[in-house]
Length: 157
Image 1 (tube, helix red, strand yellow):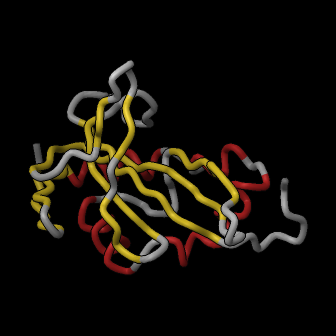
Image 2 (cartoon, helix red, strand yellow; image 1 turned 180 degrees about the horizontal axis):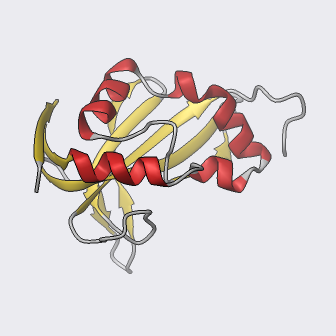
């Protein structure tokens, strides 16, 4: 593995940057563009401001194109009017530090993410269930959630 080591907060991340960059260049549309629903359009319009600068820098160091999230979903409209989104990216590699996965007693899991700003949190775990990577072994999934206003003309109920 052509390994790039990145220290980010309490994590040590090890990325095969060459394979990661190549994979992101190969697939044309992000999860949001592929879907095209109003929730995803709302996300796409705000994508530049979704990710804090330190996260954009981290993604660049790992070989990830932040404009190509693998998946994103709007989960709820909150009482304060913001929309709660969750999504993920992946990179070929490994990490040391807190795994954000919390197994549930009856199966499945939830995630415990680290707050970066008031409107953005992140975490790392291993998963390859939905991926553009040809070789599904050794993938780190970067989970994120964020809170966004509705900026499209008509709000979806």
